Amino acid sequence: MTRALRVGGMVPLTTLDYPGKLSCVLFCQGCAWRCRYCHNPQLIGPRGAEEVPWHQVLAFLQRRQGLLDAVVFSGGEATLQDSLPEAMAQVRHMGFGVGLHSAGIKPQAFARALSGADWVGFDVKALAEECALITRVRGSGVANWRSLDMLLDSGVDYECRTTVHWDLIDPARLLTLAQRLKERGVEHFVVQQVRTAQMLDMSLPKVSMHAALPALWDTLGELFAQFEVRG
View (cartoon, helix red, strand yellow):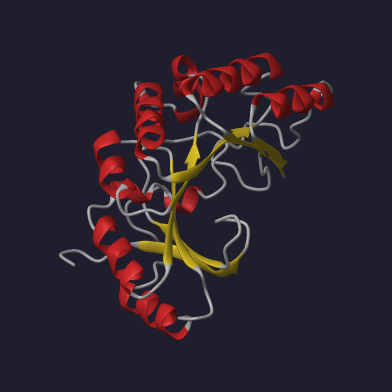
C-alpha cells in the first residue's frame, strides 16, 4: 500500500452497521463536506488526534478471523482516501465481507471503491437541489445523486438512508425525497433520526421533534420493499 489508510477510530464489534453481519467498523479520517448535524466532527480533518495505525488494524483483524463476518469502512468519507481500494482488497483476502458507508462525495472515487464492496450504506443527504443546506458545499447535491445512480446501476447490495434533523428538513420534503428515490428504483430506505449529543453546528437545537410522523412513516412504508426508522 503506497500510503496507509488513515483510520480515526474503530468499533470492534457491531450488528448495526452492516445488517445481518457481525462487523468491525473502521472510521476513516477526512471529509470534504461540513454537514451541520455531523456527529463525528473529529473525523472531518485530514489527520486525527487518535488515529489507529493500519498495521494495528490488520493485527486486530487477524485475531478476529472466523469470528467476524465483515469489515465496514465508514467515516468521515472513506472514499476520499486513495488507499481505500487496496485496504478493502486486503480485508477481503483475509476472508471478511466488505461494507462501505459513503455519501459519494466524489463520484469517480466512489466508483473505484464500489467495485470492492459487498454492501453499501449510502447517505442521501437531501433533495439534490437542497444538499448544500446540509453539507455547506456548493455542488454537493449533484455529486451525491450521481453517486447514487452509480450504486443503483452496479448491482451491489445496499441501503439508502437519510439523516433527519427537523430544523433542516420537514415531512413534506422528506416525502418528496423518498418519492424521487422510489422513481430511481430504490427498494431499501432508512430514515435515521439525528443524534444531537454532538453536532458540528452546535447552533442546531438539541431537540429534533415533529408531530406528523406516524402518518409519514406509514406512507414511506408503502413506497419501499424495505423501510425502517432508526434512532
